[in-house]
Image 1 (cartoon, rainbow, N blue to C red):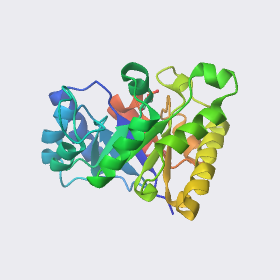
Image 2 (cartoon, rainbow, N blue to C red):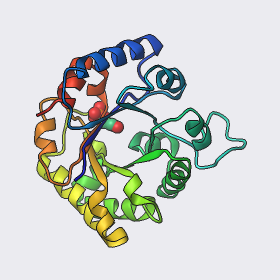
Image 3 (cartoon, rainbow, N blue to C red):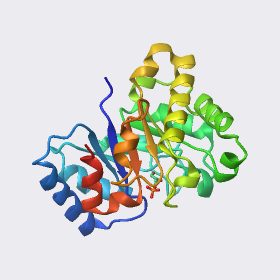
Image 4 (tube, helix red, strand yellow):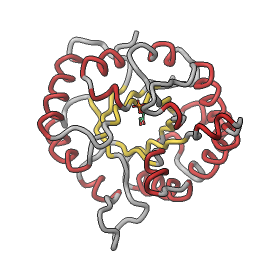
Length: 247
Ligand code: 13P
């Protein structure tokens, strides 16, 4: 039985004061709820240290939005899996389309990052997804299959989370229809089954791309969707709580 995992990806938003106010509010609002999902927030790296210290005993997982594919060295401006481990980061998003697009992240580096994170006891949230052009030209299946094969090879797969985020649905207000989201998440699981056998059934697969309070319920009803990676809507406390309590 896979317990769903919903993560708010704050991207490059939220300063210290806003973040504290948000998490305090979130804890208070969730204290009266019986949640059926794990909850995570991925914030900017400098926020992680104080947030992890402050919210250590709370049932909210805190994560980074990237790490480097080397453990240490002359990589100015980068963050290592080792230091994320030292500050007790729970998870780290890797391979997000914004990093693939603006910082040339490749499937190979995503695979290296996932291995380093697992070595350092941090859950990798591994993003895959096709561009609008690939979607319109009916290349989604082959793009996703290649990303899965290359990003997810030789991993302790049960400890990983996969996030299917069609790039054309990110920040655009366009959500993939539930049928598309389910189809691709199921395709991902089928490919995982070919690589890892029955372990595929234990892997959490999230959907991401314009997830809101008004579409989460339908998405979560899909058999292969086990949660969501939420961008814009995770910056608003009311909206995010409504997403977490979608039932
Ligand atoms: P939006 O929810 O703003 O479309 O962003 C999705 C995303 O990129 C989450 O990682």
